[in-house]
Length: 415
Length: 225
Image (cartoon, rainbow over all chains, first blue to last red):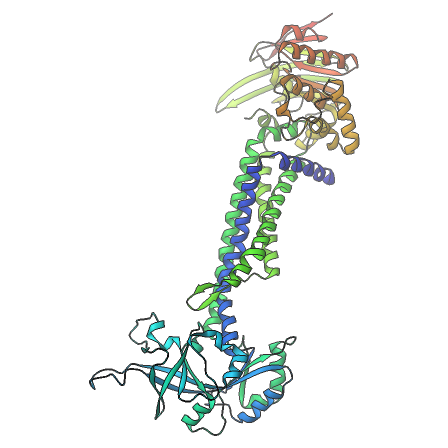
């Protein structure tokens, strides 16, 4: 009996779908596609907003792994040993050693006419790097918006993060420090008691805070300013080879015993805490929006199927009058709902993975702190497809059941 | 074939009770062709709906082929209608999404017959009705007479014990009406039990007996020679 009801339900559904107005079918499928996109793209953008930031943090700052000084130390102790461990690890493709010191940069110290005039000054992390190594790990050249990057032999030249320049910052809050300078401008770099006049060779623009508020110069220059000859480095950013995971390489580095001198973190572990929290919050927000989308979709399908069933009440009555069981009629509506959900989801999948995701990946959404992408893992998307199908079937079944349960004669006579 | 005892049907609207059938007793023999007649509001269609198990009577007994239908569940009624009864409605009651052959084959498919068998029987039924060129037409592309003949085909294709018809000629022109009535007479000759409601004297006289209802009761039963 069950199989018979299924067969008749299928028979009725296929014919009803085939002969119903194409515009009705297109409209319902269109609603399903929008619902699917609402389920996947909105939450995908919310998660992608943070994922873009995470990705940039990795690409532009930490690399796959970052080694930094222990919390209670000002630099990595036994740095030459740590650096040699890194250089000798066969899974590491590139590494960039960074020397960092707190400092500031001043601009209008030459044009100031009175002692009462305030000097334009901005605090910054002054970072000494080997330009080629840094380029290999973080592709830092691509972040240049003006001028050019450093070369190893540059003397008294810096590349400055755009967050330190008024020209690139929109914040006017009282505590925010930035200076007026351009490529070619002479500025004063102060680190501790040492100050040196340098020329701005290039400007870096990045949504990664650590880059935007840094000043770069060749590592030998910084060490000479600091009079540091102990090779005590502060950070080592690492790019690993293909085929290994950051966790595997981290573990192999830790196994070399460098944990006594430095923190070894994968890019995910090194994420700023706030980013991790926002990521969780946005994921919850995305799920809430998806849930609302799902409820709205269910109601939409319910209304569509209900109107469909109401207008076909007489025919449902006729079916029952000639001996078609209620279950068979309900199955026909379930099959129709399934058809709408599956076609809507397939078109949605094509739009998502064939158009929206590649397009946004090529043209990221410009958010102030990240380049937003659409994150839509296949397994999560298929879970949403299943949810959508389930909700649609339920929304199709309920109105059909309501009409089928009505008195046969009342339905036949349209009462 | 059908034994009806003290059949009553009352309708209620608020506190107002309307007695449409006030206690009808009737025996219909196997192979008989009965016409139910009477003026508007006499209870003809209501009587047919009760006897054909499309509605639930207020009280009374309906025994069809020895089966007391009184305690049937809705599912049992549907199954009984599928296997034992056939219906022809005044407005044809064809399913608009199904072609003529699909409409006719549907009861057989529901009975579990194969699609090949159901379509073969449906085609034969439609050919008998002179619709061999309209087999794949949708109801919207058929004339009223053609639709009613498809409806008759659907009602008899599964060889029901009783064929019920509610004013089958009401929406048809004279020629189509005569054609449909001719089909009914032919089916009767082949031994089909038919219970038909009509308000047209000419067609009523084509039956074996006319049961005349008035005010919810049998007023007169006429045997047609």
